[in-house]
Picture 1 (cartoon, rainbow over the protein chains, first blue to last red):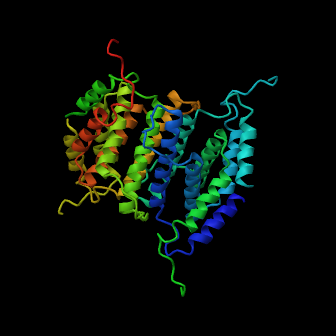
Picture 2 (picture 1 turned 180 degrees about the vertical axis):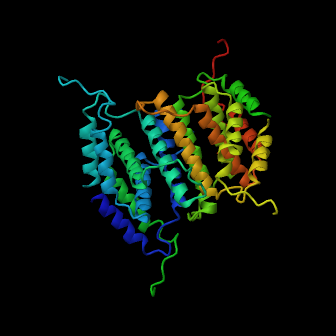
Picture 3 (picture 1 turned 180 degrees about the horizontal axis):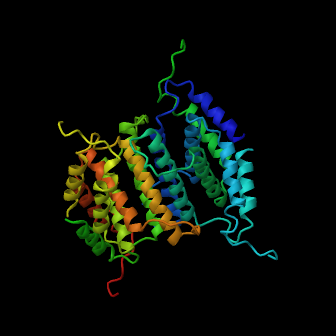
Length: 108
Length: 108
Length: 108
Length: 108
């Protein structure tokens, strides 16, 4: 499925609800919360935070998907097609940023 | 393009670099920064924060795309296929959450 | 207690540990996590997010204190005295920002 | 100055305005924005993000103070005295968490 398809699939589902999309600042609060979940997992795996023995947490994949889902909802509610914007964001990689990072040497 | 295609496209580009992906906590810091940009824009548009007369900011679409791009990189670096996880996240919408929100009445 | 006292009290405690302060990006990840907890509570109280029936969450006061604690640790590890910086931040309120917000009229 | 004094000083200033405190979700958005600024600086100093040659950024001390200021405002608007909550948060350090971290050996 393309991003556009995901955006449409979500919209089809939430349009059944009385209030399909939350207030933008409420969606943003959810984004902070989901990013916080990603932070918790990465800090246990790659940071200095020890896991409490009783602590069970969701999979990173699920939390990243929740971040993405929240972004897709926010885009829908603001009538934004993310495909175009993402293509521009990736194109910057090959353009603007191309000299900010060291390239592998051609012989490797 | 599907999410899988986007993930592959990004990977093809960054594999040319000596350090294709940053340390996970460095990627997370970038995610915080990009979410902060989204927050700034939404707060001006929908919140109580007045815009400084001199302040120019990027488009919301671009900032949301930057969040998405950062999530795709994080997923790549952790060998996560986001399509599957996102489908599960959306399925939860129709399952677990279906009674948490008021539905439109059938006659409307 | 002053902020300086709090910073010192925390430092006295953590200096007993082998690694008194986490890596800065690990501390930042914790800050994201704590802000996510604040977001969860505020979204339930003031936003459109319904609380799951099974969901119990901490008090806002405790979560704000955890944010503050994380900031104090980060300041300590970077040898920053927050008192001075906070005084400047508050002074901006009375200076730079003073014309950005509507004042109450003198007669009210 | 104690935290209580800071909270009072801020309140005295903002009570002059028609809307002393923003909506809680608007304050939260600002918190995300300020944390994003901290993330940007830490990622340049300690992470893998290269600084753009044209990029000038604020001091970490100032950004941490802005986070703290935002937390103090949020606490004020919610009638929370942060001193008590912070003392509890620090006490947890010596209690609940005391066995989660390796202590320096007594001879060192």
